[in-house]
Length: 238
Image 1 (tube, one colour):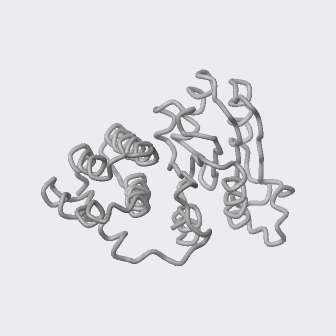
Image 2: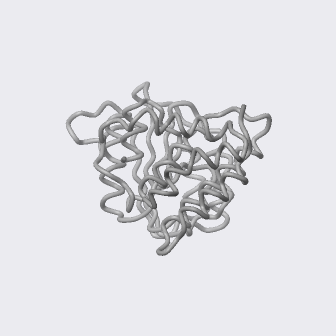
């Protein structure tokens, strides 16, 4: 399953994605989503007035201020605004400056940050994104995933630990990292769109899911250990 294509096709795009892995693949997928968001059908999304593509080696505090200024302006076309940022690193100052922007985005504004590895982004900033590692990505705009897969994620986040263990048992027994990654991506989307009493538990939950994804992407990682940790670590949403 391709996360970006799947979310875009279902009309449930999050406002911010952190996309890691191969830069060429990441940018290609991001441009396709940007074209859909901006209604561009001729493949020339780069010239759209509400599209910004920032390509820089190290994203600094000045770049962060410019991004906030651009994001605060009204859409020139009366529709969505899309910002694509390609970078190899963020300074600590720029990361802290971006926190509020990504926490309280303007409606219809979308951010896609393309990086070689999610580790270059500090955890507090990373928790504001839905993370996508294109190593695990399938064809773009792939066929819809089985309804049962998404349903199991909805069940998981509402269940007690014992019931959660039963929900993820099939994934653990399959030893299929792709299935585990799909589960984490769906789980992240559900958590990010759920309502909590305060932002703290949501950020903690998203951080735990991100850690699970990072571990899953490493060689020799244990699907069983990762999912069993999330069984206990994630808050229960009713």
